Image (cartoon, rainbow, N blue to C red; front, side, top):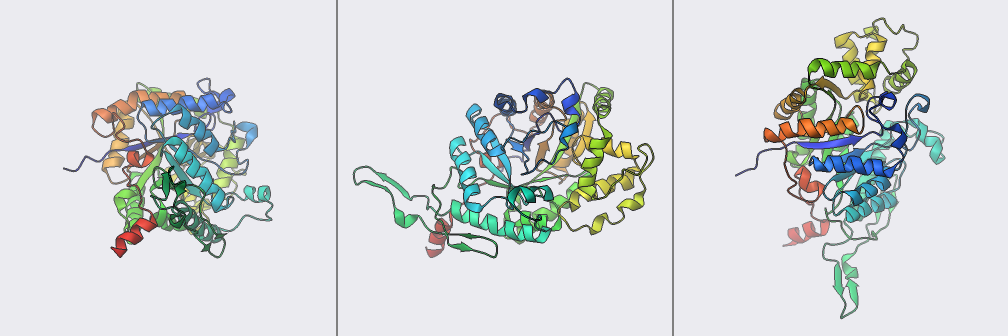
Length: 449
């Protein structure tokens, strides 16, 4: 008998919270965003609720307009290693760029995290969308969209080859004969592409998961093609159920086209919930946060998404819809988020201030204000309606926003049979329901037989 399908839920950690004004609110803790114990406490909260994983975004540049927001630039793989020591089951997902790393050193970082944590690591693969990073690495300019994705495909192929360069039984550990490993079962990869060359072999065996879970967050056409081929979990942003359903069907179809099992590709939209005892109280809390926003900050963030300035427009007058007429023609990897913003403008006709408030909470991900039951209802609707396999939960403020979700929403989902009450495995692959991948050598042996 097939087990009933269950949600995957991750806690997306954004230091003070996902609302841009969270750091100003007394319920947040901006003074602790460089304190490792703070993140370990968040990790323990997520694990107590049996969440699949915590997730960190990252980029190799100071993107936040730091004058008006609390920016924590701690390197996430190191930070997740600290969280690993404070937890036993929680998955650990970090963002790392294929543009500004090299395959060998990145493979070592995630392999080490997976070994240290006992198989809980995931790599969120990005190509880096901001040109602010280029000068930090001695480059005159940021590579264009097509080049970044071409390099990313080579990069992931090289990393996977490294992680699989040891056969599963390469370690002999024969003290009597003095043989630790069978050198014939450790292989050079001799990878050579247009952008990258990597000889190998790797300097560590396969990890408890075979290799860390591959996660992806781009939703442009190139991003979707990349996800269909490689990603095992996908973070995405949608405002409407119908848009999420279309994306879900598209990605599952692309995975099937690459000969993959669509059930092994988890689609996880973002949701940022304000939660209170009544809908009115939740909406009041959302307004309270919005009133703390600084328009200058919001306009800067908006420009980074849409590529045009709205500073010449009065804050309290409707945005001209025609400013977004070309949203569907943009070809860089901010395309999907731009289209989310354009959709809001076209459907809701907000003022500039209203749009800034709509985006203040989660940068284009779905905001929701309601009771715990209403939050659970919308999660269930998307899950059962072919729009999501789970959610990347983006609390507007930390740590309390995650705590109230864990204490009030998760039990409702558990009562409805939609979410686990106990972990049934120890690895991130176990939590996501993903198989441990065979090594290429095991596959070759099977073909030979």
